[in-house]
Image (tube, rainbow, N blue to C red):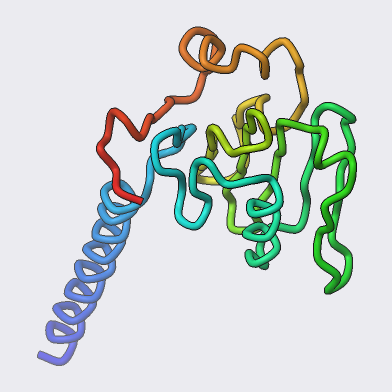
Amino acid sequence: MGKERKAKQRRLQIFLGVGLIFFAFLIEMVAVHPSGIYSYTRKGYKEFKIGLSKEAVLKKINRRKTIRTIRVCESDKIFELRSRKLFEMGQDLVVSDFWICHDRTGKDFLFLFKDGALEKILLQRLRFGKKGGSILFSQCNPEILKDIDNYLSTRETLKVFHDTDSGEKN
């Protein structure tokens, strides 16, 4: 009788373990943002509002402790924080209309400016590691950046989500 009870308990433990794994997988598939590029052109993304000046965007970047690098595309320079000192608005940041920022939480930002104001934010979210990311967030290609909407609609391999399509509230 003791062996039968232990076997029943073992089956129950295995069933509960499999159920928990299935539940975790279900949450991962339903509740987590899918991989892709999120394009924000209407309101912005969280504290990064469309229409902000470069100085204001830099101030918001400095408030995010998880952003430690900014890559500017016109001069192709990378600014990296190695101490508690914050990013400063230098000539390279003023001149560049394309800033790429990598967040330690796994998000990559591409800020696009027009006439000194934030015009568009592209946010790359990758699940299950950093494999298969877009070249938009790893290299500065002037031809692609000048006509980014065409690139996103015709050549991008990741799924692109637009804030105008989803009605997403930020």
